[in-house]
Image (cartoon, rainbow, N blue to C red; front, side):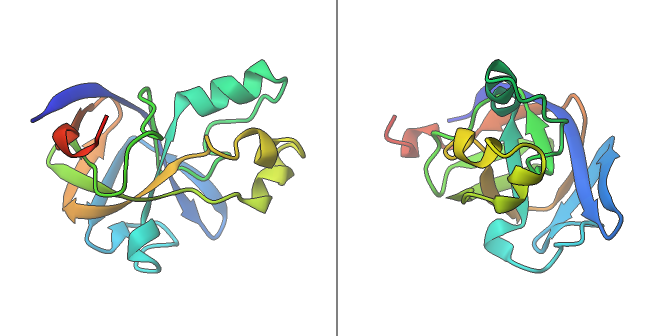
Length: 150
């Protein structure tokens, strides 16, 4: 079963000089091509964050800039309820949810309250199942919703 759930809003890579905004990203089995974490940990190769995380922070007085959560893909859909094994398709790219984000002390560099505030809402890690390139504005589809137990 395939269900349209949202769109790609922004994309980023990590480099030795910091975070870089991109209009297109390419992925393969080792992760986000050009990202400094490429081929480091396949289970954590792509970080997806929802715009809702930034809205939650802002509602508590923390104006964090997009990319502050370390995400590769910022989307207008909240995937945090998805279970390990759920799959999202963006263009030809297929990502499989591998784990929820752990608490990250580096978020305190943005604001000291951010790690606790976004404890369960920072993002979700995925691994690449099918290579592909994506662009800002691409549609996101939940592929195996029937496996989610929702």
